[in-house]
Length: 530
Image 1: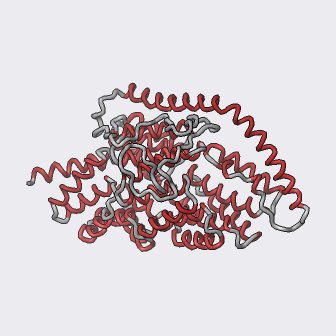
Image 2: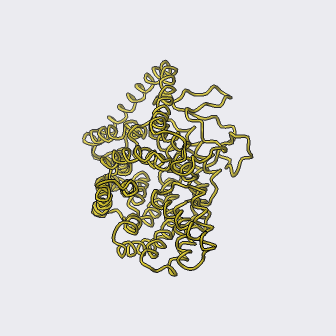
Image 3: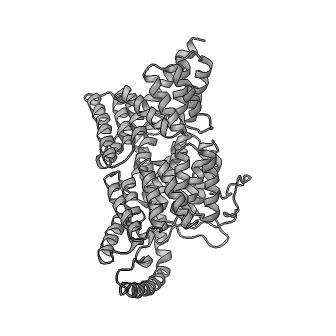
């Protein structure tokens, strides 16, 4: 996954599969910007994630009133949609021609399918009826309904069952519904029963295992799929995911390069970017995600990649840039949960807490996942109004409810449990979960979770090596730096503590409404003791 050089700076680590002169492919049929003419750079509606982007500053220092800031967010989304409307008009004639061609293609597919049906009990794969684009973004539920209807008529279509299984995995991921995972497992098992060696189902099993945080199994399934088909995009991506989540970063980097050589495209690009971000190479990660956004041609891809750019910007404290990317994502899919959550987080970091609370309340009302539940609870705590303490506690209890539901559907939720419970729940349970997760996989995130769980249980000397390991790759994450600084202070390393607390607040001064406040207080105490 390689970046496209577009800012005049020397390019870095560009694999041969992504030429620097590759023209961006922008959205048209789904409602985004029209394509650029050959040889011209396409303008995107956000166009703000530049090397000169700067953080909005600590919470409360943005200079915006809540009303004007809210209008700015609405204007961002509206601007993207105006460009989208222009794109739809520009492409109307071409789309008509494409529709005619598609009708011919589907007719031919139906004839071929009918011929196979006459063969009786032979397993079939009806590719024409199962376009992956049908399952993208806002069309996911419609695509699943179409697949279900198709499989009622063609129950021996092993490819259809594999695609349905993957669709259920995606539905669980994007809609926060772990009850879809058993359905995904059943569909994938059906596909394997019909055709044991089909790489689609094996890759689906890899994706399902990764979604359930069973990363060793995900790696094994991905390798089996790639043995059948070395170019299976889903398997290539799941293999990267598994290696990353097992903490095998050098292998993950090599896997990303291999995937880029074999199947360059949006799914590989985003993973390539994350591998670089984990190693502290934010410049390459940003450039690669820009390339991925330019190559995105469905609302689902646009929403996903723009949200990844928003998260990258937020991690660097560039809140206004993050909000612009989230607006791009929500213009493509107004219900995209990670973008809604990310926008609320950026609003909170910018001092716009009332909007952030309202946004997160809307998110958790539909998708009560641990991340937004904890964020909302902490915002209630920080506000400190009448009844806010009880509201915060209710959010933290819901994390426990989600964890129970996830585990009932085969999801390993120990990392989620450790992170939430360490600050807002059963500290002993948090440590138990963190140790269990560390035994399964050694990542920067599991090292951080174990370090923090040990700290809140008063085991700071044991925590310190894990806190140092969590930040050893150069990954720029303010929460990890904050945790390390607090633990260093507790273990009698004041100079190191000042260094890492200062770094956390410089990188992302609004990384957590409570954590940032505590980091400033700790730093103030350390400075006074000098």
